[in-house]
Amino acid sequence: MNTYKKISKHPREYEKRVDRKAMVIGGTGATGSQLIKKLLESDSWQKVTSIGRKPVLDGEKHSKLKDIVIDSLDDMSSTVEDWKGHDIFFNCIGTTRKRAGSASKFIKIEVGISEQAAKLASQALIPHASVISAVGANYKQWSQDWIQPLLYVKTIGQKEQTLIKTLFYRVSIFRPGMLIRQLDKSTLIESILKSSGLGLKVENLASAMIRDAECKLESNKEIPIVYIGNDCIKHSITF
Image (cartoon, helix red, strand yellow):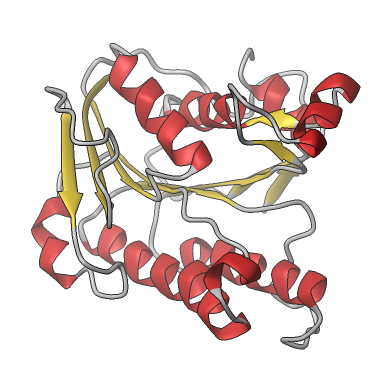
C-alpha cells in the first residue's frame, strides 16, 4: 500500500467528468450523510445509489438519488442488480462496540457487512472502492474482545482488508483521527477539538473522499492508497 501522512501534491490525477455514478452504504451516518449531500449537489455526479435501513433524505426525493431501503444489511442479496453500472463504492459504515451492543455485533457490522458489500460491488464490476477507517487500523493486531482499543484497531483493519483482498482496480482508505460529527450542535469534546484545531469535520472527510473519487482511473490495477491522519485528509481536498 502507498501510505500518506503528508502530501504536497495529490497522489492521483483529477479528471473532469459529469457522468459519475456512486454506490453508498452507511449513508445515514455522520460522514455518509455529508457525502451523499455533496454528491447530489455536484455537477460531476449523475447518479447516487444508497442502500440502508433508513432513507437518507428523511423521505425527500432527489432526481439523482436512488434510495434503496431494506430490512437489514445482514442480507443484501435482493440488491444484486442495483450495484451494476457504478463508478465507485463508498463504504461509510461505522459504529462502536457500545452502540452495537457487544464485541461480536460490532465485528459483524464493521467486517461482516463490509465484506458482503465489497463482494457485491466487485461482482458488479465497480472499479473503485473507498472506505472510512481510523488511525492505527491494523488487521494483524493481537486483541481480546474485552480490550476495546485493541479490538477496535484490529476490526477496523479487517474492514480495510475486505476491499484490499477483493478485485477492485483501485482502493482508497481514509484513516482519520478524531472526528467532529455534529456540525450545527457540538458536544463538549467536539467543541474542544474545534477550538484546538485537532478534529476533522465530517464534511471535510466527505470532501476528501469525493476529491479522490474524481481522479482519473488507470487501466491497470493500482496499489491501494491510504490517507493517514486529519491533516493529510484535509490537505488532500485542495491538491
